[in-house]
Length: 111
Image 1 (cartoon, rainbow, N blue to C red):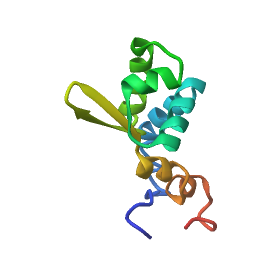
Image 2: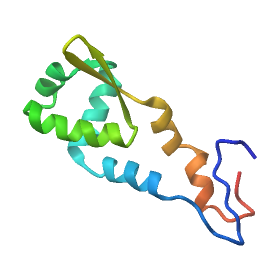
Image 3: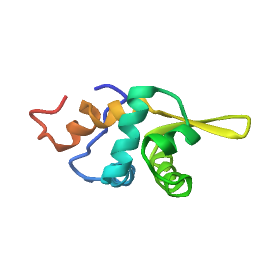
């Protein structure tokens, strides 16, 4: 079994779901999905430009960016006084990969 796959112990049934909960809560918002889509299309983008792209005041945008950042779904880089954001492809791919799916498969169908 790969080190990236969650370990499920049938006797203790302990899996830390909190990291997944944070990520899925962050994804459960149409505006945040739009922000992630725009970052996918454009790559690293200044918060000043992103505000115009998603037609949202910078204060409200900052709220959504913080949720995505705390969930690890985006990355931030400071360049001078401006913050640039980009999608964290590794984390997004982990959500869409067997790493998470393996938790919900029975022992016969697990990776």
